[in-house]
Amino acid sequence: MFIETEDTPNPATLKFLPGRTVMPGRTTADFVSPDGVAGRSALAEVLFDQPGVARVFLGGDFVAVTKDESVEWSALKPQILSVLVDFFVSGRPVIDEDTAIEEDLIAPEDEEIVRQIKELLDTRVRPAVAGDGGDIVFRGYRDGVVRLTMQGACSGCPSSRATLKHGVENMLRHYVPEVVSVEQVDA
Image (cartoon, rainbow, N blue to C red; front, side, top):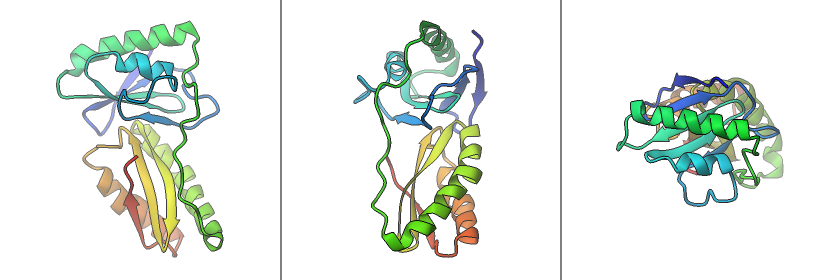
């Protein structure tokens, strides 16, 4: 099995592409620490067993790993590659439980606006963000404010807030006039 790697805009995060589906039937799963991973993702568990792994993000066809400052990629990358090969060869399921993020309740009069926002996020934003090893998740909409969560390499990336404000907010305001602003919600 050959696994490619790609740099991301976040220097602490590396994207691993195993050449197969990582999250079948799901979009993404973001594990911000080893706490609470038990029983939810066997893959995330074995990755967190590697010293220096700070965050694990599972995308449709990739795994993004964020390291802490105590380790260099030159030391950690071979360990991660070995763990990924062993895991995928074993045939074990990647995810064991639904780990979806809860959305705010949507007012009935806002349902059409939210549908438009989600469609724009799914078709224009999420593919680009996935290319950088992350995801953007809709959390809610109220009084013109769209609430989003950045995940994976995008969470903690120095340019993520600028991406939200200058990229995502401007695009949503252009196509959905009811949108006034976008705010980041931490997971």
